[in-house]
Image (tube, rainbow, N blue to C red; front, top):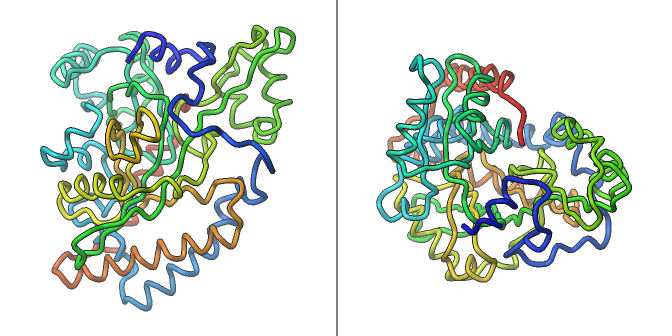
Length: 378
């Protein structure tokens, strides 16, 4: 990673020429947001809840998704440890995974010394990415630039929280690659690709950051997502021509711009992810979150790093492209969940027992308890 590229990742006012480096041009024609893009989840997912009730009855198993990836905790549906999932990777898959280590708050009186020891063993240095070991939707993800920042980050967690420390991958470009392989199939497929563009506003030497956000065509419509995150700098005048990055975590709910990347899928790309997925024991359904040099390399299945592997709880996030219609979004999700239950049923027949409803409920409650006390997302 070049010094300038590192600065772009950790300093929101770094060189503008690296904005969206390696990505296809960001098209902003048409609507800035789809009309349903930021609906309340309680409203948007009503049809999906109804479908899952029907699928549970059809397959006689409300917790079948926990068998989709039998070696993942709860199949990766809820409450799974990122460390456990990433640690399942064999030697081939490990080559593509960004180095990481894990600590638990409270396991040592000198947690920073322990963290630095484990960082050294994993080959990690500052700056690095710190995030909850159990979490979703980008919650609690921050960059730790020093031991002091890491200590402040750890101190903000509940006492029993587990924290993942991971290499700050040297690429601006990021994507979510959703992979599916049914247990009776030899080769898997890429079901969805989402290109993730980190949002910026450009200074004009006159307006402060708050004004730049509120008056931006897209950011202004979801200003609440960004204002609290940058509240310490909202009165700052951003120099003319200077870009200011509004989000680091590649999560739609945290304000990152999503575009449908399915047209970029190639056979070489499919083969690369099929090889990786097969080197993760009994992995059939989920999303790889990756950072890569440029889209041409990704299409060739090279020069990318996996930062997370999401299981049954993952989503085909290209549906949040503002040009995707509501009908198309539901069609995608209906297919996704129908496939998830089918895979779970096939694995149940192979001898992999789904979690109990009580066990699944406890895992969901534990994740909800922890997430409520996580720090803000950078």
